[in-house]
Structures are given as C-alpha cells and as structure tokens.
Amino acid sequence: MGQGHIRYTLIVPIALAAILGAGCQSEYEKQYDQAKQLSEEGRYLEAIAAYEKAAEIDPERARPLFRAAKLFKHMAEHTSSVVYLERALEREPDYLDIYPELVKELGRAGQFDRAQKEARKALDMDIVQRDLAIREEIQQQLEEVLRAREAASTQPPPLPEPEAEPEPEPGPAIEPEPETTPTMDQDLPTTPAELMVAPGSP
Image (cartoon, rainbow, N blue to C red; front, top):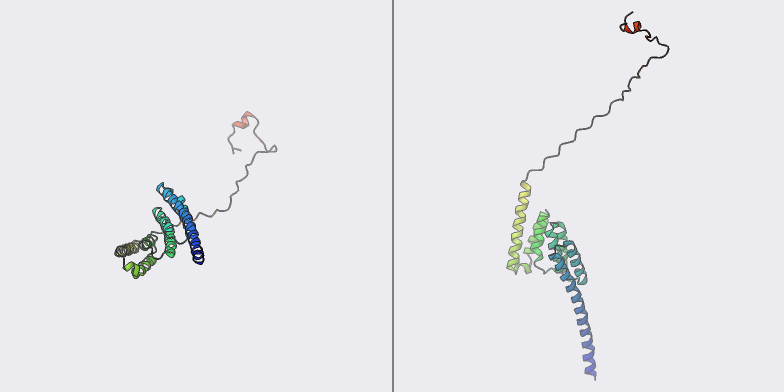
C-alpha cells in the first residue's frame, strides 16, 4: 500500500508536467509555424510580430528571435537585426549560428569596432573552437568587416553643400508722389484759340 502510494505521488506530477509542457510546446509551434508562413508570403512585419509572440510563449528559446533578426536583415534594417541577435544570444549562448550572423550585421550597420570585438571574443570560445564550420564562417565575416572598414576609411569625404545666398534686406519703402490734378481755381483753356497755344508760351 505504501509503495503504491509512493508510485502514485511520483507519477501524477510527472504526467501533469508532461501535459502542461505539451500544451505549451503545441502553442509555441503553432505560433512559430504561423510566423514562418507569414515570412514566406513576404509579410515580414507580421512575421516578426508572430516570432515575438512565439518568443514570449517560450522565453528560453532563441530560435524565434534569430528568425526575426534574419527578416530584419532581409529588409536592410541591420541595427534592428543586431538587437534581435543579441537578445537571442542572451537566451542561448550555445546557439552557434548567431555568432557569425552577429558579426556580419554589426559590420553592415557600420559598427566595425563592435564587429571585430564580437568576432574575436567568439573565436576564443571553446564551443566555437570545437566547431570548424562556425569558426571558419566567423573568420570569413571578420575579414569582410575589415575590408569594409578599410574601404570606408579611404572614401573621400562628401563635399559640403553650398551655402545659400542671404536674401537682400528690404530697403526703405518709397512712397509714390501724389498726383496733382487741376483745381477749379486754376485757369484752364476754354476757347479754341487758347487751346491752340503751345504749352509754356506767354
């Protein structure tokens, strides 16, 4: 009786945990699959939101954040891609595919110093040194970063834009002279003879 009770008390929590875990996994996979479908349809922003939701369902997985980072890269949003890669790395430092991708995206975002730092740090890690393919990929990305940095340093600086000419200051307003009109008191020519006389003649 005692042994049966012990077995019962052990089996029930284990079974309950398995059921809850299966439900969580099912919801995660459902959200992840939806994100993949949206991505294949070219609806990248919606796909990123779905990957975010999948990451909330299972906060220990780096995979949905890594996939979201790839979509940001596809949209040439390299700074956002770096943010998502770093978030993914915080969750799973052993997710080796993140390291070369992070070096690449840092370089494309123009963050050459950080790209070199992350590459050298990754190359010193034991898990990276044990994986030849990842190590070579990180090294390749590092070389591309160094080439990009050199190319950026040799480019001539952009020409300054020409300064706009200042607008002339407005001068004093000139008031028009008032027109003089003959008044009733002035002598006006009235007869044909007077009209024939040249102006100014006595």
